[in-house]
Amino acid sequence: MEKLTYQEWILIFTLISLTALGPLAIDMYLPAFPKIAKDLNTEINQVQISLSTFLGGLAIGQLFWGPISDKYGSKKPIVICLSIFILSSLAVMFVQDIKMMWMFRFLQAFGSSGGVVIARAIVNKRFDKDQTLKIFSILAVIGGIAPIIAPILGNVILKYFDWPQVFTAMALFATLSICMTVFFLKEDYNNRLTSLNVSGILSNYINLFKNKIFITYTVIGSIAFSCLMLYISNSPVLVMEAGGLSSTHFSFVFMINSCGLMLGSFLTSSILRKRLAPKNIIKLGTVTQIIAAALLWLFIELDLNIYIQLVPLFFFVMPLGLLFPTTTTLALSPFKAESGIASALFGASQLAFTFMTSILLNSLNDGSMNVVAISLLSCALISFIIISSTKE
Image 1: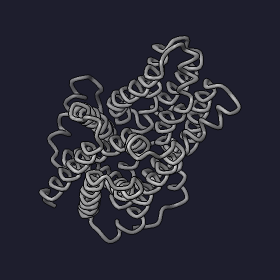
Image 2 (image 1 turned 60 degrees about the vertical axis):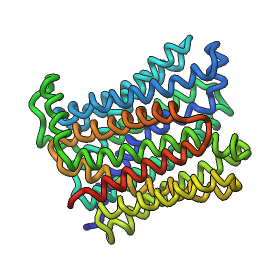
Image 3 (image 1 turned 90 degrees about the vertical axis):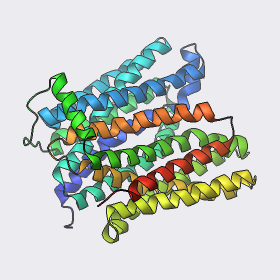
């Protein structure tokens, strides 16, 4: 593979600004939950619902912006979707009740989803498969950094200002992304869809479901994403409630595991893609996860020290850095002309699968971490079975 040019690196940094916006918007305001609840005269669990409305907007928005980008290109849709994000971010600053916050958080996500889905489409459309895997790995590294940086930035802002200014910072970041898009993103007018009627869009989405390659790697990618969400939502219980560690220790553990995910992505972009076929990278990742999840389950059953349990947890999270960029590359690669629609359905499927997985786990979970470990093990086994039965 030829080295990336200076112009390509500028493009990558522009795409990074687009893909980082969603994670920043999710995590930056988390430290402000108690203050938001107090100012809006509500409970913290009501503020937490704004996370759910954001994820809903992220899923629906991707399905909307994908066809738009295939029809009208990248530049104008990005400017429009980020403008929606900016306006809704500024509107959150003036909300008087929690329901208004839910609505504007939905609109925030609807806007930010355009940047995410179009960024994936741009990578798939403009680069060959080997370059695509490298760039998606770079974007996955950023996906690991953002959840670490976002709460820290939120805390810094809260130290000097009030919580509405956290949303001002989100709007400023989106403004920077628009500027980078306008100045550095070159439009590509080839391979446009000719119609945006509902039946035509639905037909295009249905055609994606008929493609075995797309379905195979979308399912594996969705399972990996659901594993990440299971880890994020249950790690506080494992580390603090069951493990007895402090919130400071938990932050440190979370940072280490995020670094593990970034390490996996770095290894994929720098070493693994040169020595292994993409399918074998996925096999390596799923086998590592199976071993790690089985050990985690065993250690929980034996009630071993929490620090011992954290070792297999790290080696379960790290392979996600292998799976995310590789499944994205393989799922989207057959659809250069329909990159927007393919990217949209890929992203929305991840969120839908995660939603169903969380409902299933909540119905089975009795509060024990054993159930979480078994769920992670089951997900890794399913992914391994799927990739092992897939023909080249």
